Image (cartoon, rainbow, N blue to C red; front, side, top):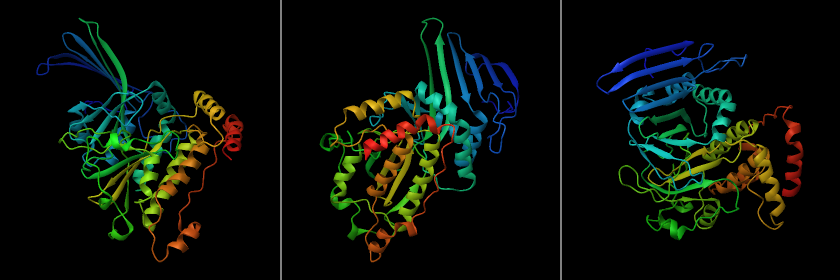
Length: 416
């Protein structure tokens, strides 16, 4: 948006023409009833309309863009991106459509040419969810950035509504998109990528076909106990993309490994576990405890942990992804149906209440990444409560408890 448009204006409209681009009319409108800010410390909860609308047209087509939560995202980008909005805009100026075969939503995906950002089309439910949690999201992410606090939530850096209509052909398109950081930017030596939900139901990919068009690392390349270097298992806790790919080419022509799931990791862990040292295990456990507690208190679920195994740096690159899904009526119905048809001997259903989903997720993530054995291993494993940093769970608002209490009790009884 133009630099001469102040973000705290109640109503601003700018009209003009640009001969160099052939755009005869540009209209920028910032609407609001109060000063646009991050909302941190605002106890009133009334910030007004925080969106900026831009319309422009050429001889045949009208274009439209709405920048949702412009000031809040601007503040977040200033804290997270070294080049601020300048680099952000330059990256978005060149992008390409991208087949993210790791996703199942069927949404449109795009990537910027410099591989820094991923653009994902949002569903109506995801858009509604973000509007409902926007203030808590900005408070949490901006607070983490200001306090230099580790956070593994994938970082959404902008949400937009874009569209166009051709007056001659009548063709028109409108959709909501989010722009997020690409977790695997500048990571060219990823051996494996895992999308982990903590569930084993339908969480297995046929590796023979998945690696058909990509080179699979041998067991000698994987982290094993006897070959650990001093910094082999540093955990990089950063935000990232909620998009992964399978046998896709990057902009430089290099291939990414396919996306594997929970059961694939368990199968590989029989011979080559992903060991973590104490400090890395502590950091990962603490981040997951705190971030999933934040999500559960907002009744968010269905998230997963995206893990990239980088052999060039001996690091695990991680990020919590796909968390814009609330435990709504349709999710409760899906849970009840799955519980009805699931065999007693089979794994529990994927759909649980937010608290139960979080509990299962944390237990499984703890199992997926064991401590590296050393002379103190037995003592550490038996006294985890002495060295693990445990976040104190924040109680869910009492007003919301009666709505879900019966479902929580029912799910616990079935699970046990």
